[in-house]
Structures are given as C-alpha cells and as structure tokens.
Image (cartoon, rainbow, N blue to C red):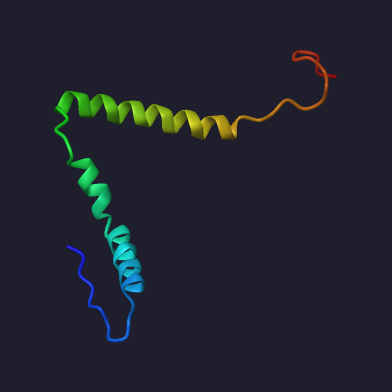
Length: 77
C-alpha cells in the first residue's frame, strides 16, 4: 500500500505527482493487472512459453549478421 504525507504549504498537484511515482515504483498497477482475472495453469504455461519464444526471436534477430557487399549469396571471392 502506498502512503504519502502531504507537507504543509504543498500543493495537491505535487502531492499527487509524488503519490503516482510511489505507486509506479512499488509496481502496484502491474500486480493489479496480473491478478485481474484467473488464468488456468495450462494456459499460463502456454503463455509463458509463447513469451519466451517471442523474446528469443527478438534476441536472435538483432544478433544475425547482415550481408556485406552487393554480391549474391554463394559468390564469395
């Protein structure tokens, strides 16, 4: 639970800004979205493996070397 104390002579806007930063840093919104609805264990495992595949695909796409030169592949001299 995120608590802040409003200081004297502090505007509501700045106190609200501090509260929002604290909520984001404590990851309250992320946890709320995670527990918003029930996901069966089998569905959760499928989602986890799909996310891992997507993550690996992104990682290997960035590491793949680009073709050098204007020659077609297979014609290395």
